[in-house]
Length: 181
Image (cartoon, rainbow, N blue to C red; front, side, top):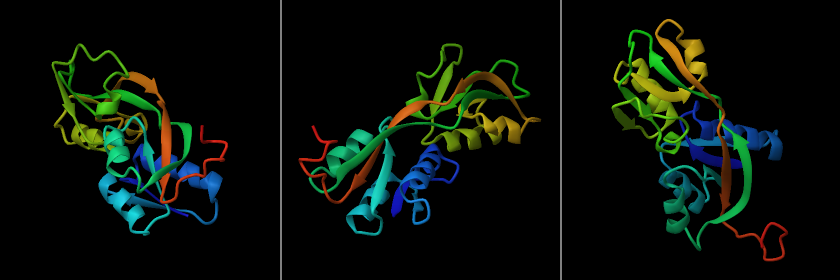
């Protein structure tokens, strides 16, 4: 089974897709990372992959459901935790003013002390902006602190986010499937 999802390889989408494949196709699965969900869903339409996995909290989820209605169908859904998240700040910034975030993470913590919230497409891009010195702080994977202890510091540990994940295929489930109400 080839499942397309949003990359890069360090993303929560890639992590959860690997977990899904370990359960449903442990020796026969492949994660296909795409730069956008439009490309992932088009690959499914074209038969290049058998499934697309998408977090329902992703800002494009509703758009994708609408855009591909009657052509691609939800065939599975489940709950999975993300990698542990945290608000990290650059070590040299005593009082961070700018904070990078992926829009789905906006309400994971009280962000009222930051004067500017800068939306990024992924948690990975938040981490890249933080490491490049473009952000004072960011909501990103906690393991970034382990990888860069000299340049980052922990502001707040947020833990993993529990999200609902949807799997799409080309054929709808039959009406008598117990998952269809």
